Image (cartoon, rainbow, N blue to C red; front, side):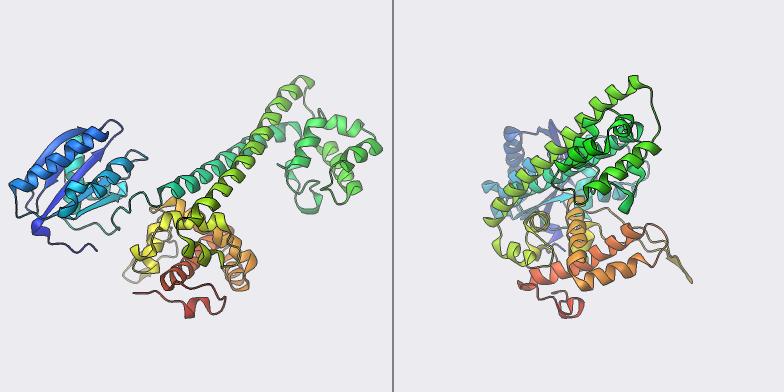
Length: 429
């Protein structure tokens, strides 16, 4: 919680858009000192700073500035950076907060019949700050911005690749309906999106061609793929899948093959670009926060990419007073469903926090449960507790457990030892 004297504070609410920033500045008694629009560029930011300085000169009893704005994609970054580092404003101790829009939207509902416009939104943001509702930490500047752009771009590439795989599945089903339905030992490929699967699907025009191909020719083709352990078994599985698949009109196969080849090329491109970003993340993180980087990598299954993603979103661990605060920031908290003697079992996750941090914590926890006995046991226990959404629920709970570990290690500045995780590492208050 921010410790300031509210009576001597100017509350500056900024409604950000791509072209302009509408600003409303209030004192504690809701007197409006600024209520106008400024261009969302360097001259506009400088004009806003001068306007704030003029206001402070006219009201010498105001000694502190609290500026609040909503997180609006990349458009809020420049103005937040400028106000937090403006030399002319430094003697007034400016605090800049980038807020979750859901918080201000819910606060706005307390005003009955309030419409929507840039001036109204700026006023609501300023009043939200004036009411003392801000619980987040001040803007940390651009220290972690470069790393954050890399880690967030990596997630963007992963999501693009996932969408492409989902799209590819529909075309694969049309061409080779039985192939993607097979699982376990009945599936000829360990990765249906991999290089071996791609080469087979592109080599053979249709399932009919696989059936017409002699066993020797099919085995000879598969033998060129050194990743196949049992070539004869793979050939038999392919033949069976081709035999059980639906047949299409021959006119459909060529367009399908073009689409499938394009999707495979896109997936391979995404994989290459992700590797490039992974190398850039590792390079960037080493020069930024080596202690935290080393600490997180000491955890089983956590490599430079997951460590970099977590550090980029957390920044300095001192910004959080407990693991609960860190979990809330990541959105790994659950809504209570209780009234009187009723205590509901359905408690959905809030997911109102930082989705990038939640992603990297989830990926790291998923990796850790495969390398750590305690986390693997905990995951399986939670997995077996419910009949549906087992993996999703178990991974979310494992991620929440992992948050306590991350907070404890970073707050204490110590390496992971692997013993008594939840008892030896407590929140540092």
